[in-house]
Length: 155
Image 1 (cartoon, rainbow, N blue to C red):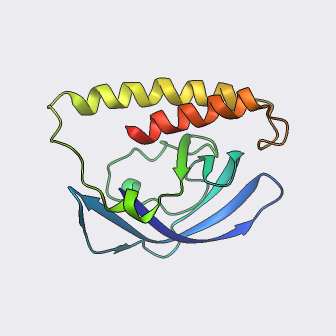
Image 2 (image 1 turned 60 degrees about the vertical axis):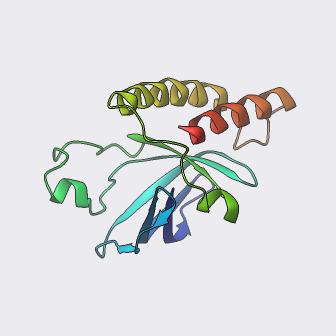
């Protein structure tokens, strides 16, 4: 479980400028203390799909500060485009955010999950194409987006 706190400012009908404040991780049901982002850690989120509890956003470094790049974990060129990364955000209920995982993964599980996430993200982007933030989505479109989002969230 990961929880972000941030402020945002609309940047047109399909974008938000997000200033990150803190990130909090829960591992095996134990919530760790929040970690503050350095000042200037901001991104522009390009809204791909949104409904009452799910938001798909594309984002890149986009002129903001990148702690991962500052630490040398990513190359200077990584993630420059405004749509370099796809994020699936869901609103968690209190019971969902406090539950512990069922067991420890095998050493290869992270690689398998990463490959499955890439595959599901590609399907999700395809499913969201031409829906105008969900306004033009039919019941089958919404079902498919929710199903793919649920499958991504489970990873």
